[in-house]
Image (cartoon, rainbow, N blue to C red; front, side):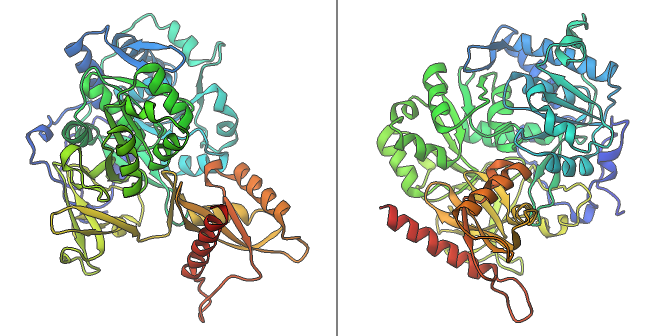
Length: 554
């Protein structure tokens, strides 16, 4: 393996993460010129986010809230985090560098577990509660967790997964083996944060690949603070009296930043929602006085259509990411509420948003400019800059960047020191970046990244399916609609009943949000003379079908 860049002495006893960092020649260029990004060599980001904030604002400040009226102060959160960390170390043998897999919906307990794992010097692997056993097995095979911590309500799929022998600790189910019960026996409310290096890995965040094989992105302790001190501090500009809320799971880095890291860094509060559809989101804004909301354009459109204009109007800040924000949506929200949505593009590889704009700097229809601390450019296929107004590949670099865990795809994402996001953009003469399309086969629907091959694999598990291809079709509500073209076996009847059966089948195999919402039965799939499947033909057909459906419903 190529020698790594100079790194601080690691606190990790389990050296798995450093052993699997990509070679130095494949690292992106990192930029840390801003004074805010000059972090000390020894740094535990969980301690900075929690202990330092308690020292600054006091323990009685409200911190984590739920729609049901639950309210944790910063002091209560610190006690809970310390107790969880102590149980993980003393009863489960967690040592610095171990990976701990987390599974549960957005609530104070998941947040506390995330902080406890990192305070103990371990590495978080946070997963969405919607994932099925097969998906969890893939994540476990890559991350090799030493222990898993799970909300007891979401235990069955985790128990059915192959975790490589890692034990499972639950919370939320009273009993002698529940984490909460064990914590009560830990009388000591203190826990000394492990003296990790700023460049020790703090978290593994998984992103879908276009092949369906997930990629683990590796982020350091200083990276966690860097997104707070760039996008949050410079663009969102939170206040200590703000209440953050939103829909993304904490397993998504969009949700992790906007619903946990940013409020903690600012000494603000977070309203965590286990169910965060547009209706629940609007109710939470009304009932709990949330002032900053992070969600996808889909949710903003849905709230407008359902008459929740007043709810949106109560916000101080609205942040949109996960999919392109159409100018029409921006203007509709602004005209109805006066709210100026902060659009942004980020990626799991970069940890959070790197192109955005706020307030008077917003240009409706444009994503924005490079977030302070980052640089962005539009490049041609040879890596050279293109003239203003010319489409090209979006490239970015800054204080965060792509480090895949032992994955050959590192060489594709990082080129000449730039992180290549897989998006086609153009930059106008005023420096604003405008989104055009994805440059790979990823489907982005309602803010979720969905790999077509993964959905295809699930469909092929059904006895009636001989062949299939899954593509994205333009959709005004979701951005893209997951569309499956299916060739059935001779014995199968291709009708609406089979389509519904296939949709239900997929929901049982992979996370339900990935299922094909449109299924078209075809006699064969289009292929080139060499036998290569022609995705572009099916994308064109899916787009036409989507347009026809729109006309019919008008």
